Length: 171
Figure 1: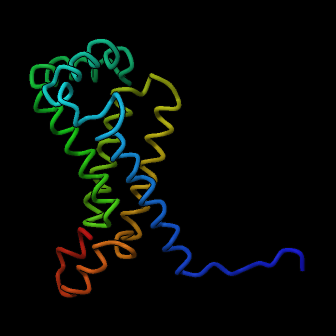
Figure 2: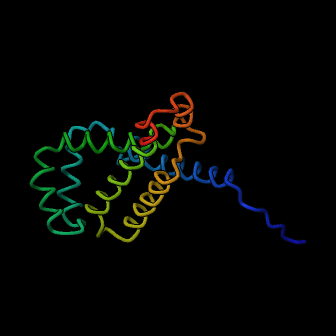
Figure 3: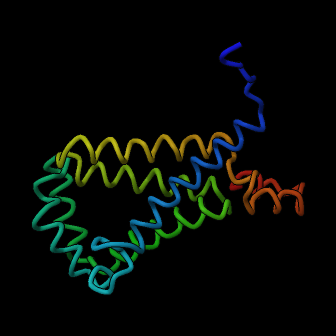
């Protein structure tokens, strides 16, 4: 036979989900710590970069005029607080997915952040929507498959505390 068909096993599927979890983790860690748009940069954390991006970009790329008004009325006056929340959410999603620690909680944060990205930059182009939609799909798969239980800290925690309902919910 020229091509041998190998059956897909549960082990192969779990490994694929681990790769998906790690790749989406890198996207969130990159957003938090790397590049000119890094959220843990001092200028962003003080709120100055966030206000500048809102006034120059997000007002024009928001998916709806009501989103642009919301940014102007609520986010701009409290820019330092929102900048810290954005940076913390990106880092929490990235670290949670990367370490396999409370993956369901981290993936939920990732979905919320991706939805916010679509709301404020959705008219910037289809690549923005597509990239964030891909992150939403990856996070949804991580939630549904409990991706942190294989090659992650969630698996070790569940082995250690097998009767914890709360742990099973978040891990």
